[in-house]
Structures are given as C-alpha cells and as structure tokens.
Image 1: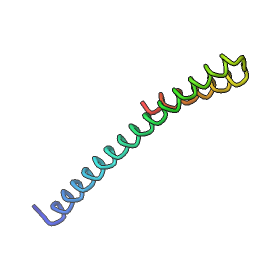
Image 2: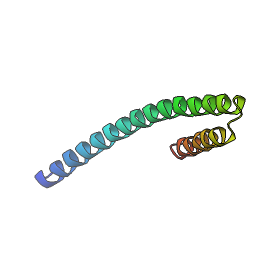
Image 3: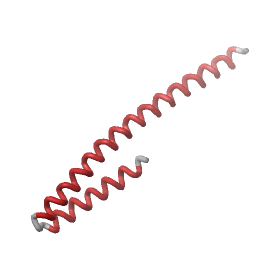
Image 4: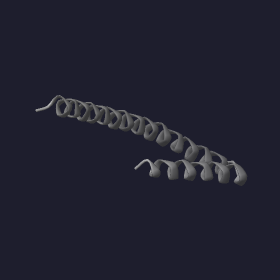
Length: 78
C-alpha cells in the first residue's frame, strides 16, 4: 500500500468518525428539543383550557394556536 493510499484510508476513517459524532450530537439535540417542545406544547394546551374556562376565547385561541405551531415544529424534527 502506498503512502497516499494509507493517508486516504486514514482520512476516510477520520471523516467517518466525525460524521458518527455529528449524528450523535444531532440526535441528542433533537431529543432535547423534542422534550422541551413537548413540555411547552403541553403548557400551551393547559393555558388554553384555563382561558377557555374563564370565558376568554381570545386567550384560549392564542394558546391553542401556539400549541399547534409548537406541535408542527416538533413534527419537522421527525
């Protein structure tokens, strides 16, 4: 094996390790975003219910809308 071939293999190995690390970091980031987003979505749903019980349809609609948008964003994360 020539020196150039050996270097190419080393470089390929480094790139693969880097890509695996990036995939792991992205997975952790997505997991954290999903968890926080899910918690925020639940909070907005609860707030919508509270406003609805008080008869505040504007507040209930706003919080329902926010919950839907958060849910849409969570769905884009996969």
